[in-house]
Image (cartoon, one colour):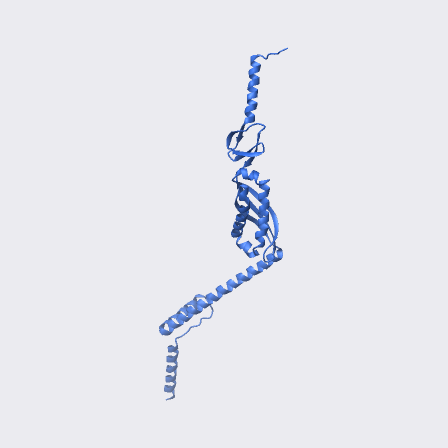
Amino acid sequence: MLTIFPPQVSIGIYVFLIVVLAFMLLKIANQYERSVIFRLGKLNRTAGPGLYLMIPFLEWKVTLDIRTVTAAVEQQEAITRDNVPIKVNAVIWYKVIDPAKAVVEVAGVENAVVQMAVTTLRTVLGQHTLDEILKSQDTITSLMKNAVDQVTHPWGVAVELIQMKNVEIPESMQRAMAQEAEALREKRARIIKADAELEAAERLRQAAETIMLNPAALELRRMQMITEVGAEQNTTTIVMMPSEFVTAARGLGDMAAKMSKS
């Protein structure tokens, strides 16, 4: 017995089938996503962003985020070139620039990039001394970035930046560095003080030469000293007389003594 559906039911079935087929054919990728499409196991194309078509049952996709990814590199223990044990944390910024390679050339691209950064971090730290690591972090991170980027570039990944986040050194080494820094500060203080004394001595020499050329300047300096002593409100005031006054007073005294004898 043949059953014939009413026209309304037939139209509904057709619409439903069309919607299902469209859902299976049409795919959408966000602006920051790319879909790597395989057909029967073979790489076919990269699609997105926006709307694209896929053949059901014959094609499937792997969607990747092409935005910059920030990944933390777990703390690593390393030995510097001068045999100092240190612990370092780092952060790596990278992005996928070729989605097809990132899917085909490496399994688990995110983990692969982080592990490569871990290995490079320990290798680069072992090639530098502790002072270089603490004072030239920009240079070391640049070396790390270039080394990691050379490996990840065939994977379709570009490393934008690697930055050391924290450097931990042993407490004994911290104390030694503090003592060294204190000794350097004391050395600079003594050098500055010695330079000041040398400059003061040079100025005094120049002042003495000027006074020797003009004896009146010496008398003015003596009067200035009397003024300075009086300004300090001391109970005892020392008056410094010019040597010419002393000589004249002594001559007058001798003359008076002779006259009294005669």
